[in-house]
Length: 468
View 1: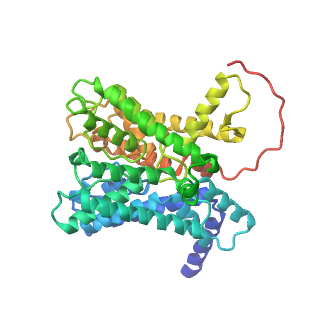
View 2: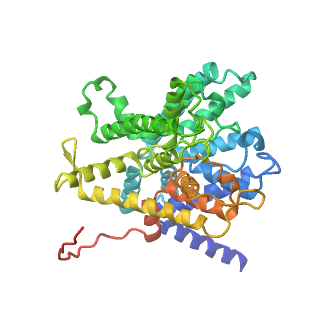
View 3: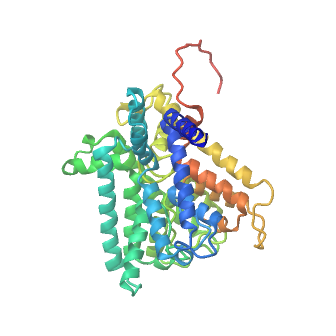
């Protein structure tokens, strides 16, 4: 009887597995990867006795979602093998959880019909991968090449204060992996504060963050047309939109941060000279949108409220589609701005660079932005239910701005912290865990996983005007 029941259970699991849609499979696979990584990281081979299952769960979730929030000291409480495992988890999440899960689905659903294959191709295209096979191999190759070059430069010219050659190499490699995948994990307790004035560290880490965040489509388009960059019109509209938005956000954010923190009493840039101020604000503008590194201490005491609010906006916008970062994406923000401009100018259509944007794409942009904002506010609301701070700390209340900053950092997979994450109790940290997971998957994918694939309605309805 026992073998028969076991066979029936296996067949039931197999039937259930084949019924999963791509979004549902992505959610299940991501949860299984996090669960297995939790047990590995909590083992004595990877961490000290102070790291239990809960600490491992939070850290692994943060790594797979390439967030960077942590409630442990990575450099001290993880063994060298544990740091290697963490780096592997960061690469797994950074190269695209959606691409990897869909790639695995090709094996477990090898006999899928045409509809499933089309569904997989569409899902991959939506997440900026564009296909499995050669494209996925190219993503891996390009990623490892960029991280390798960054490692060599950091080893030779960046982390020169580390005397041990092996430690210096590992520190360079780990930070390059973390930067390219927009994770924000560091091996030092103060992250990169000690390298605030080091232009090599700032330049390499910042460049890797940007390259990893703009997405494979943009990198491939720029590389394939590298000899034709004088004629920008030959680049795709997506590439031009991403590059333009990224540059505007980086330099605009740096100037805005420089302005807000210039007048902050006791702020982080008050005692710095002009070059140091520009270097700090430029780096923070780059890393705030998705990476989570910091070269200055971040807290409500060191940053102005205006500066914190500006960083929240940058985190919400995030990186670009198909990249290793989070947020609603630069293209979504650009479409919303273009739609707003068209509305103010009285146009019926949205035009960008002499190209009309479809209404379906605009509806999706509005849906992503609004749903993401509502989810972040829900996280803040849940943090406000009951005491959310650990009983071991003196400070038990957090301001609304601190909660909003932390929730936005988690959902947009940024990883910046103003001293709240480690002080939260398990309820508060659970809210962040769920937020990181949902933010990495994406609101649209989560809704697709919950509601399944619904055929479009063919029923038409009469129109009626509503006053705005």
